[in-house]
Length: 241
Image (cartoon, rainbow, N blue to C red; front, side):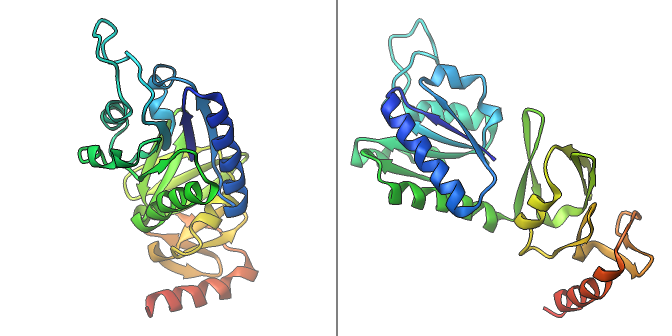
């Protein structure tokens, strides 16, 4: 997860960045952030980020440098949607309480008013991260691209050196991340760590034995002897729900 903070007032950027550091630490979320002082400096990197905290009142002539009309935060949000799709999160930072009525055409998380309070920002971030959990989608960063995958389509994860390969119903993706991080993210979605190198979707098991676990795609993953009974119990419990 990558977050972009964009505001032309450095004191606000620094304050928000500090709050986000506190938030990620307190919530134990795996995310990073970068700061920007203009829409223009951020415009070429939209695809790199999952969540945007935007100054709604900062104008820029990025849309058309020859046009005297300056871009608003709402217009830049439209660009984010066009370039990055509907899955990008947007939080507007504004000094005006009534601007929410202008947001009808852009799907966003919410507005937060300046001066920004820690509790208000935390609530907005909770809303965003909570919506990701409820959506049943997992964000996987591969190079400069972020892929959003339906959790139900994931068959298993395999660790190799410092990389993780994700096997789904339709594709394979390799990313640089700890398998333990995925295990934490998917703890409530029916995934099980069979071995130090494998994390599997219990619902995708085709055959289970002490010699290995055959998954729906025909691949066999290793299971340690100490984990076999726990996996069997988890499988039974999950299929009784």
